[in-house]
Length: 138
Image (cartoon, rainbow, N blue to C red; front, side, top):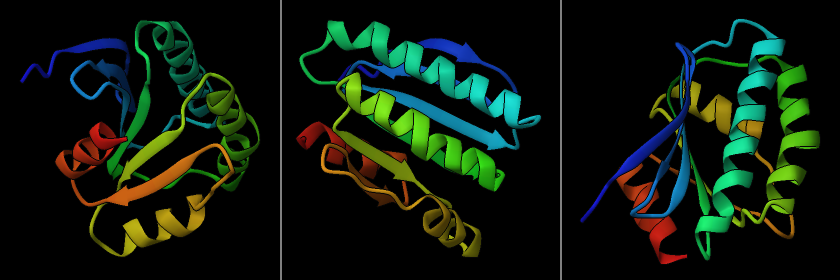
């Protein structure tokens, strides 16, 4: 099985790539963004990647790996919900797998970021492998 990965953006906080075997855009977050501007910049790179790559696949999913991510500001969560989610849906994303750390912090992130819409189905996992398997079935 090919797990070829094309990386489109990378810095100390975030890596945005496409995993062709799923297929999905994968975002891996580590630590904290340098501020709201940085957080929004990373989200813009994510959207660019989704929009550019969606034409190469009949279905493209999203996988977010938060196992090493820190908390983000409430205003960033609001920005994500009001700007990024509608733009992802518009670009054709229908399934979003989110991998969370298995601790209290993971539960806080899940509560903080819980969202759903008619178009987007979100599921939470404790490993990237489980998340990838779920996405492949969609």
